[in-house]
Amino acid sequence: MKISLTPRTGEFFVLFARAGENALEVARLVERRFREHPNSGITQEQVKAAETAGDGVTRDLITLLNTQYLTPFDRDDIYMLATEIDDVVDYLEEASDLLGLYGVEMPTRHAVEQCQILVKAVEQLATACENLKGMRGVQQALIEVKLLEDRGDRVLRDALASLFRDERIDPLIVIRWKDIYEALERALDACETAANVIANIVVKNA
Image 1 (cartoon, one colour):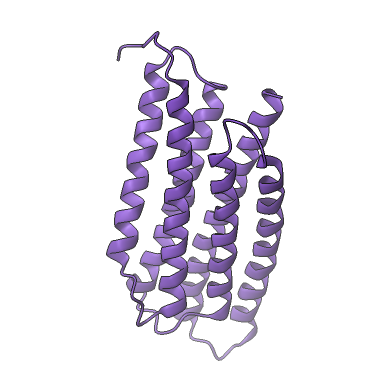
Image 2: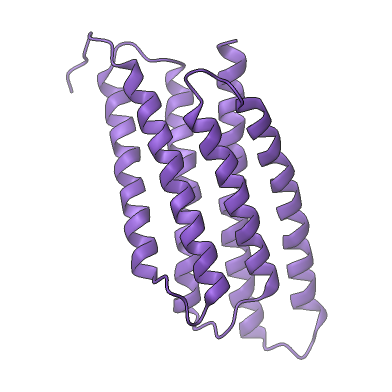
């Protein structure tokens, strides 16, 4: 693979903004799919198509990284941020897919709340990605992501407690919802990790 000596640093910022936008689109699709299930206007095919588009942005970022001599910030940070945003989308798609795979009849309020928190967190992450070049407003967005992740942890604990509290619940249903809750939590954790990478970028380039 040929390394280019012609600076194309601006393209990194364009692609990160696009990755953030794609992640937000997926988060909104998944939130609506959960909220409206089983009669949602959003299909798993639509979620998968948006996830695949995000894979393309990630590939473009890594290709650009591997072919550029000059980068706007640390190479490891660029790679980590690209892959963590990709993980957010992958985990969201996985949770959405489990709705159909497990034949879920109705969503729980905990799952819907997790999805709502995820949309808000990804909104803040997308804002941070969009403002990477000038670094304006990034810190506040990162603080919001952390607060939302903490809130998501509380919802997850409450969700799991409610599953195991009622002995009348079919064990298979417990297993299914535990998997879904944890997939959504992994998406939120990846969102926080991406925010931490951006925080490191801000510190290193202050």
